[in-house]
Image 1 (cartoon, rainbow, N blue to C red):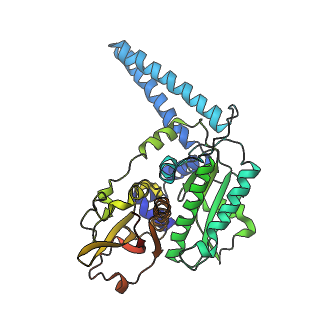
Image 2 (cartoon, rainbow, N blue to C red):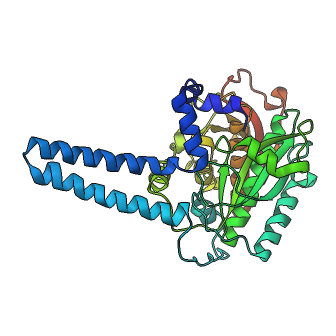
Image 3 (cartoon, rainbow, N blue to C red):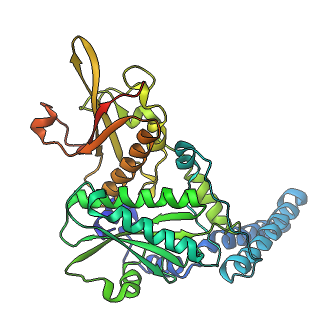
Length: 388
């Protein structure tokens, strides 16, 4: 992702980017030590509380022994995390099982961002399948737009945050000259790769602003040309590990929240009336709404919105399309998120035999008199026929 998109996502952070504290934070972040700082600080605070409690001389159980016990537990956990994750002193973990029998919706819900990977590399069979599906999804016939995109495989410890342990990545590259549909294609195509890998049992993690561009370009070597290429994001690929720092566990729990459907789907192109997804004629799409709701997005901001469009056909309200767009002016991270929604929506529709296709419509073709500036329109799913 670009620095401009990262600034929009975290304006407060970037206000301090030239300070010494910021530089220390970035160094700790990209050397991997930042993940252990919170635990270390908690140990120090518990010890300070115990010291103050001892000096006060009252309630020793609460003010002395309890903080000391907590400090001991946190210190042991800190040492364990550093040994097992930072220095890879852990037993060899088994390969995960494939999810061959799982339906498409359960697969999309089961797939979550992996923050800690095993130190082993992909098996030759898995690596070959990864390269095959990546090439397939980048083929011109599988894209929405006309601008080429590609996924480059890298086997190297890229400088990324906050994922730990991963040594294999797919780097998503679009043309240097900006084209929004190409960025949407990156999101859609890479998400289809991610879902394919999830069925194989592999784990993945989308990384946008948390990836160091210089590290990526260095490892790409002559496969990257600045005049021709633009790195959109990377995707870590590997086998999930049970061992992960305490800070990562807390981070993952905080990200297991999503906006309700009524804030994401709307019944009119002005995005003013929430969509009742259980009412006719919208109920036929079932869990397609749910898997879009739970799709990944940069910083978990959920910037994509969808409006259903109907018209009267012989006196019957008929669903003709869904319009997808972003509720921010972001050029990159929100466009990728729209593409991820498209992949999940398309996969869900295929699973329940809802016929349709994506198409970018002109303002006249959409026949909308007062389209809002935000959410901005990106693409439509044209309903071809409804499964009975």
